Length: 199
Image 1 (cartoon, rainbow, N blue to C red):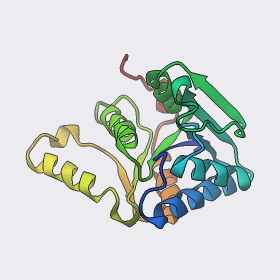
Image 2: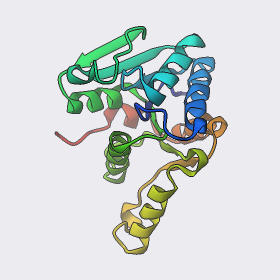
Image 3: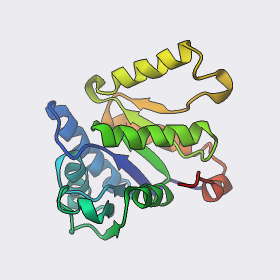
């Protein structure tokens, strides 16, 4: 039976206003390590990005950080990870994060996190891959986005035949079980043969 080996986490390079955000990042990092699932993330040492990476490392987990060279100082590149990949641009970063992950989780974050999440939702909608995408709606952070997606659906910009598939987790403890359940429904060959749009 195929299983999730690596999860890509999108999240902010700031801690945010709610202490629950950083607590969620740290908790999820521990959960990944305890379940022998590697973390794939943006390679920074700040905010929620740094929190999830450090928590994974402290619990004995494996971390892959992927960061563009121009962000290595701005996001304080975390050199302590087992695998650190410095790339030339954001497009390469996002492609490698996709290729190395079996599933995706969006914790709270800013415009960059939103862009990464929406890109994955778009690829799923266009049937370019079947990897699970989960929105971690910690303390209702993503509620405005979820409401906007509902609005798009109501206004018929998301039609039944092009439905956007995603999972929503309200607390950290339910994220991994939801992803595992969704991943088990994927045909193994499709995760390997997934095609992506050309940049």
